[in-house]
Image 1 (cartoon, rainbow, N blue to C red):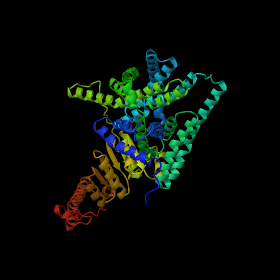
Image 2 (image 1 turned 90 degrees about the vertical axis):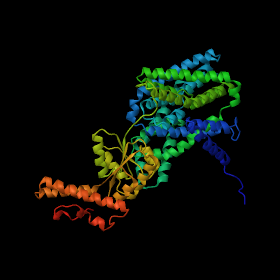
Image 3 (image 1 turned 60 degrees about the vertical axis):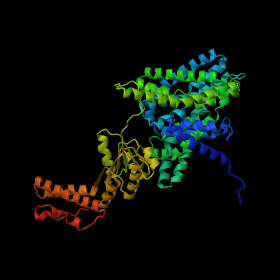
Image 4 (image 1 turned 30 degrees about the horizontal axis):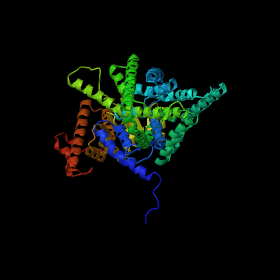
Amino acid sequence: MAAEGAPPFFAESIVFLAATVVAVPIAKRLGLGSVVGYLAAGAAIGPHGLQLLGSGEDVLHVAELGVVLLLFVIGLELDPQKLWRMKRDIFGLGTAQVIFTGLSLYVIARFAGLANSTALVAGFGLALSSTAFALQILQERGQMSSAYGQRAFGILLLQDIAIVPLLAMVAILAPGEGPSTFGDIANEILLVSAAVAAVILTGRYLISPIFLFLAASRAREVMLTAALLVALGSAGIMHSVGLSMALGAFLAGVLLAESSFRHTLEADIEPFRSLLMGLFFVAVGMSLDVSLVMGNWMVVAFGVATVMGVKGVFLWGLSRGTGSSNSDALRIAVTLPQGGEFAFVLFTAAVSNSLLDYQTANLLNAIVILTMLLTPLACLGLDRIATRMKERGVENPSIETFEEANPTVLVIGFGRFGMVVAQILTSEGHEITAIDNRPDRIAYARKQGYKVYYGDATRADVLAAAGAGKAALVAMCIENDKVMGKAIDLIREGFPDTLIFCRATDRAHVLDLTKRGVDFQIRETFESSVVFGRAALEALGTPLDRIDQIEEDVRYRDEERLAIQIEAGGGVSTTERVRNVGQRKKEPESHKKDAAVE
């Protein structure tokens, strides 16, 4: 019996998934990045392409949640102290970029024949870059934590804040609108302050205890639900007072950046963020009216070249003037020259307030979309120029690729063993990230001054969020052999070049770790037994040179037994060969017997 009807949006979902499955791999294979693939897929299936889907505006309203979740994840990567250190980039560099670029584009728009109010909206709308687009490029290249990546993010964050006064500007410029009274302005400021305070207080004092309680229940789906609730709830509070939803989610993320649940939250949110971000770019691509572009191709081409040229020049110049190297300034210039998603919001508000006609708004939207489409090509072009310069033997070129090394150590398991390992590493100045799945152990470690995060080592997404892909070495200090084995397999599969050092519990565990190809393993009981035995012999008056000889013999026979067991592929008691290893080496009769180790 046939079904009566498909669920809502069922056919549209199939079309969306099929288009992205085809377009994104092709775009990445061509070196253009996934964003171009999403845009191309949207243009192909949209109302101006094959007409498989309707208007992209309805999809865009849902897909904007992807931007919200993206800013929440970015906020998790920034603690308040780090954000404070970025204040010059946010309020200095970011403000200067918006003002200088906006005024320059306003002057050009006036020369192009636009009215004063229309030119103001167009100029400052095109001055905004795409937070979603630029951060996606930075994340794909692994450059969010680089110096230029942080400066680019500071500019983007200021632009997200700038949408609020720009929307107010549209309301002021709207024909027939009178100025707001002092009481209205005061009420608005009070409402915004209350919303910000609510998000800060909730994130500071309530969320961590709630997640601590949920973690004790070991219910992953509840943790996932809570993560989404925090991100979307904070966004909703900000939206209710007229601020950017993305800004609210970012603020909540920053407040949770020092929480021990930071990496688990990031791993739980990531699949939803990726899917919704893909949907966002598809919706943007669907909005591209190809016929309008072709009919006004000279205007659109001039607009695209002007926007990318003017923004690129100011981004480079302001970055250089505020301390960036030429290399970093060029990277910022080719990462942020596109128009942004908030331009769509500003232009829509301007149409509603009769500041822009529908035709002009569509042309401006087309310019924004095409600048997005060309940004990956600009990044690719910079990389190729840098590569050719290096091939020609140019020493210390002022243009470099986006690649950057950032070695760290990931400590998995933060009991007594892991804590000592961390103490040794940090004493030498190495940066570590530590995860554990026991809230009580995490709380104790934090009291001792260590930053340890809640995380399940058997989840590939948690390992990636904790930095397994960036780590030069992963220290496995877990007590559970099965959990360690699964974590090793995940790291070997996802990050094959990472060094893996392991804590082994016994001889059987050593054999298992050797089969898995770890780079180093140590039996904690064996080593402590050797030290214990040395101390006992020394207390009994044995000469130190004799103690060294005995230790060397014990280690020799232990290693030979392990070699025989590995060769035979057996367990702890493989054959008679293992029991008789000690007799192969001529030595005093009293030392021929095997030491009973473990």
